[in-house]
Image (cartoon, rainbow, N blue to C red; front, side, top):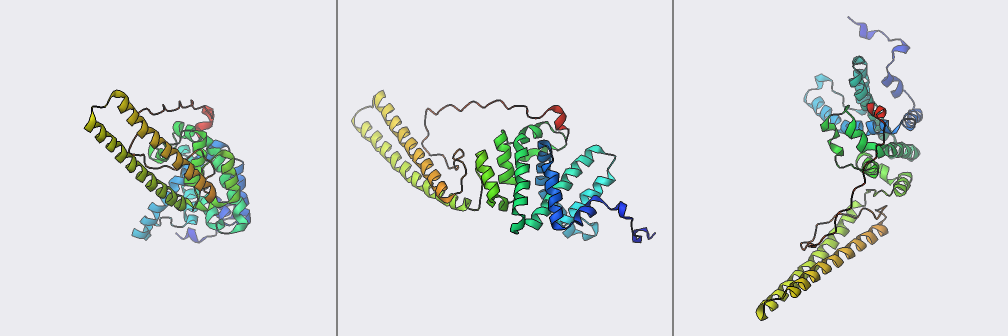
Amino acid sequence: MFAFLKKKPESSRSDSDLILSLPEDRFFLFLSTLIRESDPNSQVMRVIAYQNLEVNMKVTVEIAKNDPSLGAPVSIEDHIRYYDRLKTENKENEFAVRRLLWFFQASLMKRAEALGLGRSQYDDLLAEIWITVAEGCYCLANVVQNNILWSDDEKIWYSEVKSEKDGIAYCLNLIAPQEIRHMEKVKKFAISKGIYLFTDDREDMHNVSETLQSSMDEQIAALEKEVQDLDRQINQTEQPSKTDKVNIDNKATLTCGVISDKMDERILDSAKDNKTVTSKSEPIRRKPPRIVDKNPMPPCDQLQQQQILSPKSTKN
């Protein structure tokens, strides 16, 4: 009846107890070694678990608020123990154990952030962890497409990830904590991959973009008025010839193209000054102009995606 009061032998300690009892420096060493020695497919599994862990944690916190008697996990340490316990309880179910293992490891990454962010002595370790995970995400699109470990709802985040570069950029920009993107090692890594790296200065870039957009809108409005005046003048004199109409359309299209090109140059120059863009290959999105080129350039053919992993490597 009171068996839970008996002291358990040392050998019966769970993985979570052993890991959480480590001193901070040894905990970081353990986690960085675990991640560094994993293959790309495992990095993708951690990323998927990490992103869905955010949702799970919000749900369990709400459950704990509404009914504390249920014992739902709240802290990150609670989640580490929770997934470790479920892993043990479901050891006969390989499918469940694999999922729980990745949630367990994602929880360890969360704990590393809680301990290390804001403490400069851990900056390099955290940067190396996330660089290693991001490098593995080059195969994110391929793994997500073929993997049955995760439900469609759990994989919906990655529907727009199409290329190797997309996978790396997604990991750094949309999964890694914001503070990670400020670390010098991560910035250099992003530059080496030609990745547009989000930072706190996005708000400044947004303001610059809005200002340029407003300026472009004014110029387009003036252009529209000029075209309307030309139409009115032609209608008052004689019916325009086909050549006149083509000249009017070409003038409007050419002017809009010049405005658009100038705006791209100003955005990229401003981004360079603010050091918020690591690559010019991904300009800031803006609202399309109201006058549209009637003869747009055809879209580039997309390269056929290579098969990155063998069928064997997708079992994770």
